[in-house]
Image 1 (cartoon, rainbow, N blue to C red):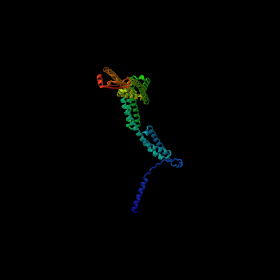
Image 2: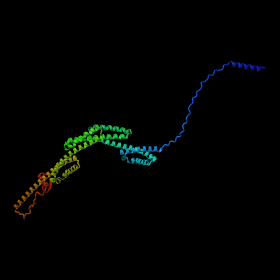
Image 3: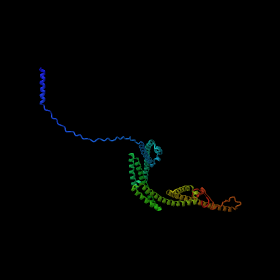
Image 4: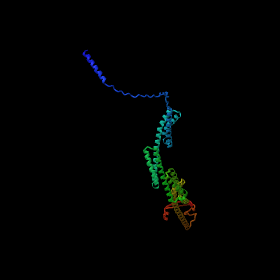
Length: 416
């Protein structure tokens, strides 16, 4: 046996011996797997869903209807605050679009209606804003006028509480306007105006009452005077309740009743003054003062005519003053004319006396000279005079001799 073969055999034997001495590994058995039977899955039938068809026309119709309702509300508000009268051109432009949209809506032309109404909405909103601002400015102007009237009527003393309420509302209105709350601002400005108006009327009513009391005219119209007092009390009560409308009605009637009572007092006074002036006028007319002192008479007559006209127009307070003035003027006219008449009568008496003396002297001279009317060339012929036809001329020399001013009078009868 060869060496290689021997070595191969030895190696094989070693391997076999090592294999016999090595223990086999212990293998643990796994527990049996229990497989649960599952019930068979029932397959549901496949449902094929139909595609959902969206009704876009219905959605558009609802959208257009909602838009129409919004525009219609704006339109109604514009009419409510009279924006259609304040801003007719702007309102008409918006309204034409609205009417076009409404016509399209009724015809179910949804897209056309939507376009028209969408254009009308901002136009109406602008009309409302412009109208609010215009009305606010008008209220401010009225408040400014009432503020001046309140000062003139002494309302800060006669109605201080009402003016305090007016001032607070005015401040709130200005704040609302600054914040862009124009509708609220307009309402507050209007309320402030009502408080100012009430203050002015209350002050005027109290002033008229004081005038009536001062002149003692309450007895001239006791019914209206008493009713005015009742209405004044009612107005004060309603202001306490913040019922401005009722308070305004009451204070306006109170002022009316006080004015009626005062007017009645002036009417009675004017009647009294007229009677006095008329009596003096009649005296002046009786002695023909319109001729004797024409200029003075015309002045008095003009005042009288103005008084009569004022009384006819119901302005008895003014008429009473004019009648009083006419009474005084006619008294002066009568006295002046009477003085001139007396002077004229005195002058006529003096002239007659001188005329008689001249006639007597002439007759004595004729007798002395033995003259007769037939052959006398110096006879002074005198025309007879009567009381009903007197012509008197007081010459400057005669007037100086009598110590009076130069006077020329022409009279006819007793009335001259």
